[in-house]
Structure formats: C-alpha cells, structure tokens
Length: 466
Ligand SMILES: *Cc1c(COP(=O)(O)O)cnc(C)c1O
Image (cartoon, rainbow, N blue to C red; front, top):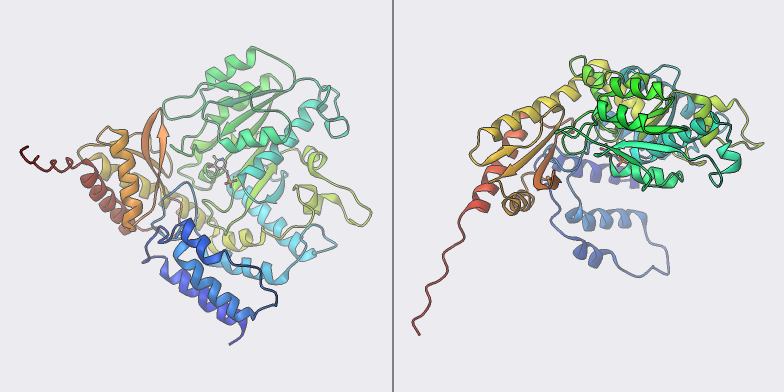
C-alpha cells in the first residue's frame, strides 16, 4: 500500500468514527504531551511508520468537533466535497497568489467568490480575499475602512501611517466579538478608544443608541456591526445601522462570521436585511458552510480600498492586480483555501446551502422547545438562528456542572459561557451531519447531567459518638 493510500484509510477510519465515537477527547493535554514530547531524531524515519504512529498516538487527544454531536463554540464540520478538494489543494501545492503562479487557483477562487457573494446577497462587484478566518477577515475589512475614512480627509495612511493622522472614531456594540477588538489593535486603532453602543436583551446593537452616539462626534468614523452574536445568534439591525452611518459618512464593517449565511435562506434572509449596503464584511466558510479549517472571506464593497490596504506590487507579479489574490489578503504565499469553498458550494447548490442553514436553526428551536418544557431549565435567549443558551436550576454552579457532565459523558460536547452576568450552557448547531436524533440525544445528555448536578449532596456520614 502506498503512503497516501494508507493515509486515506486512516482518514476514513477517523471520519467513520465521528458519529459514534466519544465526542470529547479521551486524553488530556498532559497525556498528549507525554506521547509526543520526544527528542528530534538524528536520522530520518520511514514516512509510513511516522503516519501510522502519528494517527494512533493522536487519536485519543482529538476532539470530535467535525462530528454531528459537537455543539461547542460555533464550529462546523467538513462537507465531503470540501474535504476532498482540500486534499487536492495540498497535493497541487500551488502558491495561489497570482494568475502567473496558478491560473487555475485564481479562476476557481474567483468563481467561489462570485457564488458566495450571490448567496450572501452582497454586491457582485465587491472584492473577496480568501483568508484564514473571520479574525483575519475583520482585520482586512478594518484596514480597508481605515484607508477609506482617512483618505476622505486627505490622509494617506498606507504612505504616512497613523502617527500624526487625524483621529478615527470607532463605534461597536457592547457585544462586539473579541476578534474585532484584536483586529482594531492590529490596524492601529486601539481597543480603548472604541465607543461602545448599548445592546438589546438578545445582544443586538440598538439602532437608536448608535444614531445618538454618532451625533456626539465627527470626523473619520467606522461602525463595527455584527451579524450573529456568538452566544445568542442575535443580528444587529443592519438596515438601521447603515442608514445612520450614511448620514455621518461612516464606514460600516459587518462581522458576519457565521450569521451572514442567514442571507442564503429565503426565510431567514430578512434577519440580515441591509447587510448589502454596508462597506465591508467578514464571513467564515469553516463555520456554517462546513468547509474545512481554515477558511473565510474578507469582502470589501470598494475594491480600490481593499487593494490599497492589502495590495503589494512587485515586478515579478505580472497580470492585473484585480485577479491576483495577493491584492486582497495579508499573505503573499498562500494555499488556495477558496477551492474547498468552490467544491462545498457546488456540492450543495443554492438549495442545499439554504437547507443547511435552515436545518441547523430548526434543530436549535427543537432543542430550545424540549428544554423549555423541562422543569428548572430556562432558555435565556431568543433563538433567532442556530444558538441556544440554557440555564439550569437558576444557578451558576449547577449550570457549570451540567457543562462538565455533558462533556464527561461523551455523548455530546458543548461549552459554557457567561450571559448577562450569569453562567449559561451554550449550544451551537452548525454541522451539516446533525440530525433530529442527535438533538434528542443531546437533550437526554443535558437532562441526565442536570439530574446529577441538581441532586442533593449525599448526606454526611453520621458522626461517631464521641
Ligand atoms: C467565530 C467568530 C469570529 C472569529 O472567527 P475565526 O474564524 O475563528 O477567526 C468572529 N466573529 C464572530 C461573530 C464569530 O462567531
């Protein structure tokens, strides 16, 4: 058997095990370190042996996050077509930066971008960079924003930097994702200067509060909106936000890591109405689209701002910059991570993407209804998308014990969070493989963990008479 054939078998064994295996890792980091912390070999070893041993040793320390009963954070699995395309990308080993170095990669990624813009309801003439994740997407979008708002007041930030530049005002909802804060740090706008805009009970920015905050200042302004709160799934009122921002000449960036995919469903699209009128967007492909890690889209409605912020020129980069991916991403050498997006979208079609998104939301509602009917269980959020927040016995400790109980049980995996100052169990349904039966199994695991956590502590052993 060749090395790659053997590897294919190992991959199959892993993938086939996902629906039935324990979801959480059986071994912890210490055990994995003990298994892998060995000296660098002096002489090279046989690749087949390396791969076999690697797979066997790693298996207990792998998280079944690509499987159907992983509900932690917001993570997707991998559609077969995307996974297979990713293997091809690795085998092709292209430097997917320009039309000179890989005409095929640039053409395929161009089509994947066009299809994604169509599904997301974003402007067809927007520019797209395939980046590693929404964090990178937010960074690219905010770099383009910085270029544009400072350019409007006559400052060339790419040439002159931020030292001595007119101040840039940044407004974001109180529930802004940490990755936007990180992106703002990277592009030199800082975290502390952000004007925080109050949110509603589900974590969506209040449009009236944004309008009021905008009136309180002036100058170059960037508004960071969100489509899909990581806890509740809440979507900021984008139509209202864009309208208020326009009045002040502000740039609107939308962190739509997972939530922007609602646009691909006719029934959910009204939630993200107004998104197309924003100026830049970050959208993950590795979360709700179920493309393999790592992959996201950095989309900018003003391609010239995108290229000004990200582009490079070098004599060896022939061809128009508009077709070269290097113009839209922070990297020069890169893998063609948009190719799996092409394959994933082609395997689903427009109807399949809508079904995937709607199916996850229906599963989330099913779980919320089951839990709502359960004594002592509270659904904390308005389940607008694929996220459900649960609280058990109205108690932080019991709620955290439910998270630990479900993780230890192995039937499913989910995490805890804090919502409005109270501990909560967070359930995210983002996997293409998840079925109603999986949701019912999760409900069972939650009930068992709750019963165990809420049971009165065993009575202390009677004291011996002294
Ligand atoms: C997951 C997430 C991010 C970060 O995305 P990565 O792909 O992990 O970089 C940003 N914003 C929101 C709302 C998210 O859910």
